[in-house]
Structures are given as C-alpha cells and as structure tokens.
Amino acid sequence: MKIDKTLHDDYAILTLKGEFDTFYCPALMQEVEDLVERGVNHLVIDMRLVKFINSTALGAVIKAHKRCRAEGGELVVAHPSPFVRDVITKVGIDKLITLHDTEEAAVKAVIKHLNQKELAGDAPVDQEKVLIAFADEVRNKMIGGKKTLLGSMSNVDGHKVQFVFQGKKQGITGDQGKQLFFAGGDVSLKFQVKMIKKSYFEVVATVDAAETTADGGVRVTAKFAKISDNDRQALGQFAADMAFLKQQLPGK
Image (cartoon, rainbow, N blue to C red; front, top):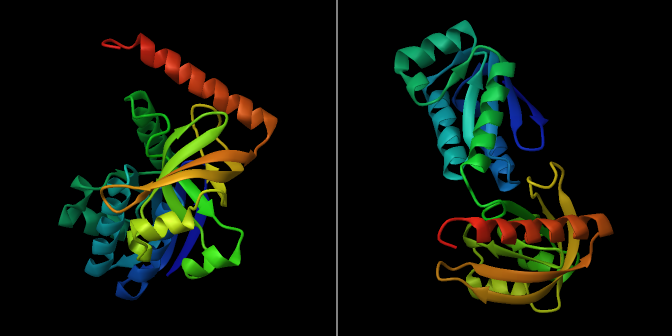
C-alpha cells in the first residue's frame, strides 16, 4: 500500500492506494501521529483506491480516529471503494466514523467541524498547538537530537506568548523541562491564531519564566525577540479585542 499526503492549513488528506493489510498499519499510525504532533488533528482518509482491507487495518483506522478525537479533532473517510464500503458497513464502523461519497464532501465536513469549534466558544488561543525548536546543540542533545517539540498555547499578545509543554512522551520531567526553558534562553516558535490569519506566526522568543505544572509539565512565558512589525501589531490588536469582548460577556 502507498500513502500520499496533502497538507492544508488546518487539515490533511491521506490517500491510501493498494491493499491495506496488517503490514501497513504501523505506517498509517505513524503518519497520523506525525500530523497530530505537528498540530494537525483533522484528517480525511481517501480510500477510493484501496482494493482490500483486513480486520487489523480497520482497527488501525479506528485508532487513528480516536487519536484525532483525543486532540479535539476529527477523522472522516472519503470515497471508500466498493470493497471498503461493504466491509465498513457490515462491521458497523460507519456508525463511528463518517463516510463521504466524495473527497470534496469529506473536506467540507472537516471544515464545518473546524468552524463549529471556533463558533462554539473554544478559547481562540487556549490549547492551540505551538511548535518549539532550539538553535543550540546543548538543548537539542537533551531532547535526543534536533527535534521539534509540541506545546499547547495558553495566551499571547503583541509582546509575549505563554504555552505549556508536556514532555512525558519524550521522558522529560517538569524539572527537566525547566532546564530546557531556562530564563534568558531563546526558542523558535511556530503557531496559529486562526482568528487573525490562516498562516502561521513564526517568531524567536526569549524565555522570561518557566514553572512546573501539577501534571508534570512546564508553563513557559517568553517575550518576543524577533517578530515582524505586522505580526506584533496583529497579535496586540487580537489581545485588545479579546479583552474587550470578555468584558461584554454576561457575568463579567
């Protein structure tokens, strides 16, 4: 089986081709995990070219669906081949994972889910993903090589950003996290604030403070050291707008 990947701002399309059996389950799960780690948790699995799928592969699709859901995302199946549709409906998986006749319909459903999340009042920044990288060899060695870490945004304005990093998957404790994010250390950050623009903000920030959280993570506050004037202005306006809107809400 072959997996083709198409990345968009908020979602990805994985097109599967060939016979999807037990051997290829790890490949699919790795693709899904890589996307989730990058902050992409809305996926379309296009299965129009899948000639065969076995029970283990069906289980992998369910696991991928649950993985996306656990991150607040969604996974749908587009254009299943006659064989795939027959198997999925007979087993009853279509009651768990939505099937769409075309890729276009699947994409529309994913975008609708994304829009509903924003309109439902999910915090505009809270829990958005932030990609974290270090320029120095010392900290890259601490995390096992030059890698991109994943954090969750807490707050942002025109001067600083706050995020939480959970290092459990990398075996990094909260105290070790504080060593990574020491005061004065620079970090390269990439994140979205979808209410401002669809593309990413890419900045260099200097850690101002880091404190461990109750669940073993580390909460980092970092001031922008390198950021374009337009981005600084946009983030500042966003913070001011959110402060105003919160004051207008009932009970405030």
